[in-house]
Image (tube, rainbow, N blue to C red; front, side, top):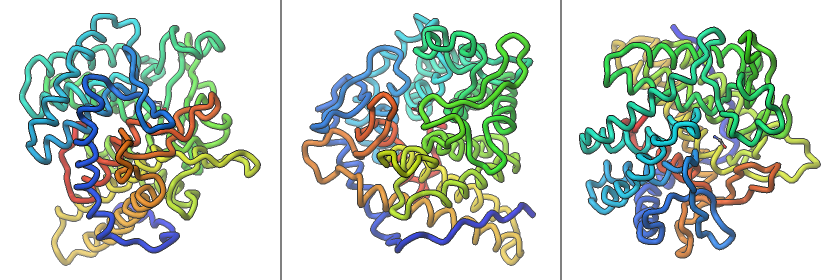
Length: 407
Ligand code: GLY
């Protein structure tokens, strides 16, 4: 029997029906914004709830496409599909200039080309996503066992040129989905081997003993030996950046989905329990879980949305395991009880976002959630963020039992 990782009691009342009833409104808001956004890819929200848009190579460029593809999958409404397809040339152009590509290929191509291939069978999209997966595995450092995050063109390279070549980051636990998909489509094991080894290496180094996390972990760029954990977007090296923790929760739950290796699910649950113990009772995370009390306590709705989707993915994984067991077995009852805890926490986090950050009733808003914190230390806080919106939709869909996503 796998270990039961209990969560703390919910910090407030949960109205499950109200949370579930919100999905159609979110989809209608996405539809309302199709014409306003047009062919552009949202990057970060402005004060009037319009968007600043992505230039080439932006890591966030696929999150609007991902929302459109999910809505198309659910409704078969061609308007979502036609708008999503308009972005194809953006992703084709990126592949022409590979020096700017980094570990974010997983985000960029799973939600655009993999989505299009899965929903329409488009061969061109499949080939583009496979090329992206090839670029991603070339970032793997075989001796160290990790995918190197960034290039010498990253802003951090100016500040720390000695560490950039040996830096891994927590966000990439989501990006490995592209490699798992490529292994399934091609039958070539190398993609999957890289994804698993990278996940194992980060489990060892980027996750601390108390199941909080570093944002990044440095390896010696020449000898590939582990050096130390650091932050880039968090408050401090030894703090716990809330979105980083959310990438790990969702990422390890997803790695379990692809591998069915129980150690990844156990890890996802322990990372989730850490978050549940430190999230403020209103259910929307402060941007860093170890932010000193005298700092401005900006919220990060995107961390809340990714965490909610992660909790619900853990709940689905536990339910799926339970389904394989005899009806009356003790283990099945235990798994279903545990799944309910994770499900309720996921719904509670969604309720927090609905009550405090939701913009669906604001006719001017071109996004779904306010109060995202992209990068507080450079002044990017209190914004709409397309990834917060994407995971808000994903989490609401998981709450309804949807299981087909593009990772
Ligand atoms: N991938 C960078 C972030 O989460 O902000």
